[in-house]
Image 1 (cartoon, rainbow, N blue to C red):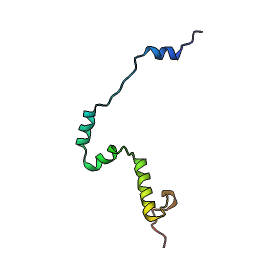
Image 2: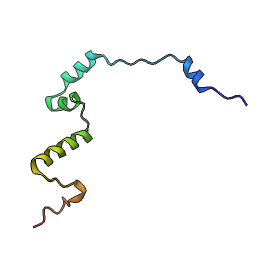
Image 3: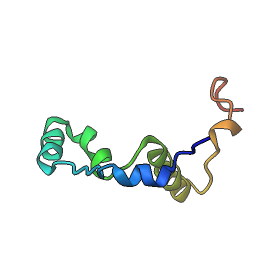
Image 4: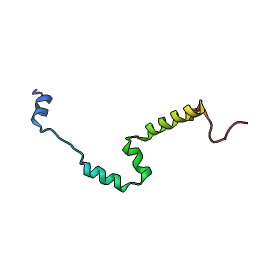
Amino acid sequence: MKMLNREKILERLDRIKYQKDEEDREEQLGQMNLAGVLLPLAKIDHEHEYELCHDVAKHILGVVPEPDEEDFDTGPEE
């Protein structure tokens, strides 16, 4: 049985080059409102945003409960 050589096949293919056009990025940023621009501009996704907010709250308050540690539906214990 004849086997295919993956490396040789890949060598025959042209390299794909992707360059994001800086003009397109500027246009996208110009179409967004300020709140919508800040996170993409800083390259912050929702997980990173949560971590940043959690770290700031912990720095200010000292202790911040994790979401799974509190029952937010019943409110604070008295």
